[in-house]
Image 1 (cartoon, rainbow, N blue to C red):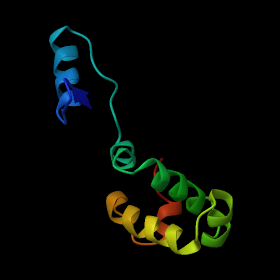
Image 2: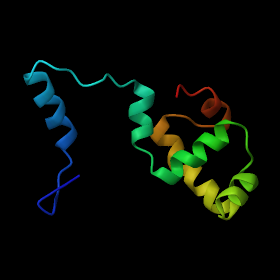
Image 3: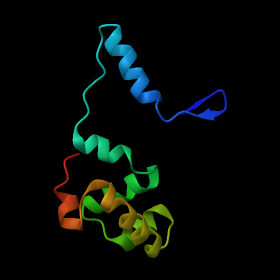
Length: 94
């Protein structure tokens, strides 16, 4: 988030603290939602398609990417989600 032109990475924590102080509560997030929040929008789209069983080549065709780019995005997304394979990805709690 940006505040006065400066990146502010602690804005979500501050917002939650302000809500708690006012007597309100922020919606609880599950571990899966926190992990998904670490993905880029493109990683998220690719991961969801892969979890549905779509092949890398078909994902690439749908997104106008090369299959190697899809492989790269999955390679970067797996550690963020704590999974090591497509099988684990299919069992991931969304």
